[in-house]
Length: 153
Picture (cartoon, rainbow, N blue to C red):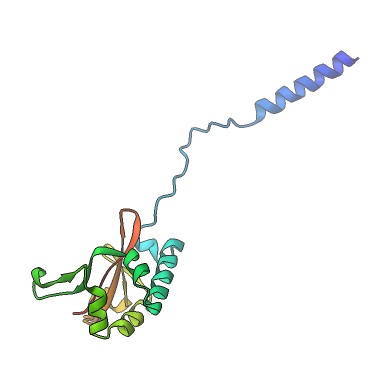
């Protein structure tokens, strides 16, 4: 009797184990890729970046801002590319020209996709608006979000 009971339990266990799906499925694992810039406005990473950017600008935290900017950050568009001003000197330029409130206002706007950038204000992304004021741009550079320009014109 014990042998029969043991045999039944063993057969039930074998049946249960063979009915389970295999652990090695042939479907490739889903990889999470970074969102495209078009999807970035809804991306938690993007929203966190913009939040840190806004706080750094409000506090004039130059170290934090510098860590969020590209080395060739554009802050003046000249008549020709040779007349553009990029990189070093941006904070002095903003101080000398009283641009901190303007910068704070622009980055408080909603960012929208335009080409390979997320830009603010949204009017800049609308070709029919012919927007010529200050604008800010964020771009994914080597997988990380970076503040790449704040210019007018």
